[in-house]
Image 1 (cartoon, helix red, strand yellow):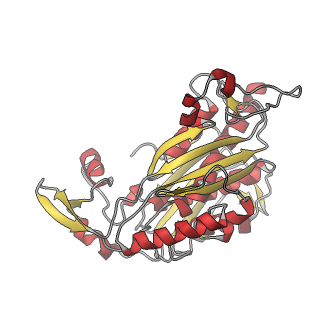
Image 2 (cartoon, helix red, strand yellow):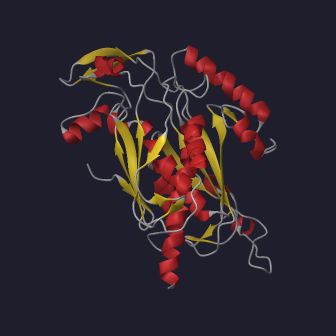
Image 3 (cartoon, helix red, strand yellow):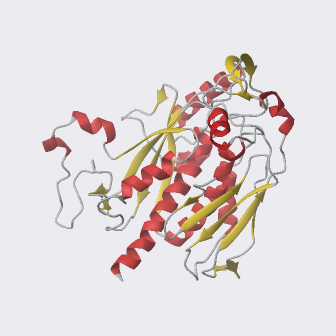
Length: 353
């Protein structure tokens, strides 16, 4: 299986399956001498881990990371950083009924057709559990970037969404299980997710991300545009169906005279419809984007599908699954954004040299 690595200089390679012995990763290219706060890395993992509230999967995993190399006396050594996260609460028997059955809109069919074999226990590599390794690497990238700030948050669950006049308070994000920066909307979203869970169904939503204090000059102007790599990073996350940055699709409804970001004398802009990126290169303004997540494919309702023999059969999901992925996706979005910015930061060093 190819495609297990992300990045050019600051590169993450992940391994492991949802119901295997462990997940883990190797980070190459992290500079030496970076102070590493292990507690902060674990806090990032705790934001992603299952079982943290009543509106996410109840699989109980501590998601404790163990570093094997690359960190000595609290600092990076410049060598490969290896780490593992043990799986401790697998219930593989919950998946026996889909051994030869393909769940609609899941990766079951495509994996079987591509590889001739699949790990049906929790989806194997197609499981969102793989993203735990990304969060570890993203947490290290954040500590390398220091002054750059990442704020991801939920902006919609189903048809409940933040409106333009709704207050956004970043301090509210971690105060509610939905991770919405508006307490009133967060409560409505939480109630809706609970209702969806009772119905044995799932629902999608959107996550926004703002990156502050990004220096001017990150990104390349042709194929390696900063926004293109951010898009690739986000679209590599399980269940993501869309990515837009800056004015996005709403910008198509504006005139150029409205959309153009006029300059201030210091090079900043009066507006920021560009989303902090112009010509594929960061311009020093806040980078902001939206990521759309589909409803989880595994639902607790009966569905018609096919088996490995092509016969039509009826199946129903079992086990522990998220009714909505967006609350736990917030730290994953931040992690992938941090990995992208860290990589371009190092690429920019070599370009200027």
